Length: 265
Image (cartoon, rainbow, N blue to C red):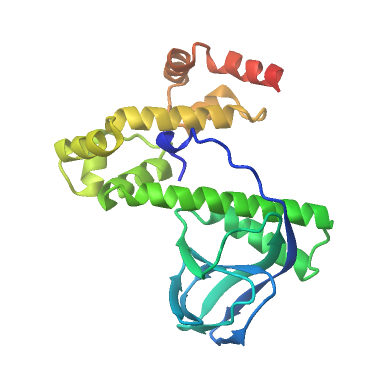
């Protein structure tokens, strides 16, 4: 989940990594006990399973990823049909993962697409250089770290507020008012204001404004979208209103801001 409060972290150093294997498991059958000499990631796309790893029993479902340390004997008992994608890798320096873990992911999209790409490379369904595959793997590990931190941050936020934030992101291009958002969450507008003020130190509309400006900056980097199209994507049907709002927030109208970014690059 990309939110204004989560956008200004110090960028972690990408860990060099090398892909050893990758694949998919789309069956109702179980995986017998086995172990790998390298670390393994197992992303659950659909279904759920129980994993026995030594003295530990893990339960994982869609939207979660299992981290399995090297040489750990484990199985996978599926609860009906399950869709997983997995990859084994080594990294330098080694990732600290002494015990098997299940990590909930606020958003699996990036990791899922990259791991499916790695599976296609490993199974020779598409051609790729080893360096390119390892770069994709490093991106997966970086995103996994980001999602892990984000999960801990979101865990401090009440579920109803998390739902409100997700609704804003999913409907960024739609008209959103405090009353309409409160109605979606089945609470009063005053309760919604209190949640935002208590946990995020802002108001719902101010948060939405920052979210839309964040989206505007990202979208303006595409040279193929007009300012009017960017405005619509970010929830401003009136392009003139968008230009005034963006100028007030950034000191430049969106067109000039875009040119300035091109010069900087």
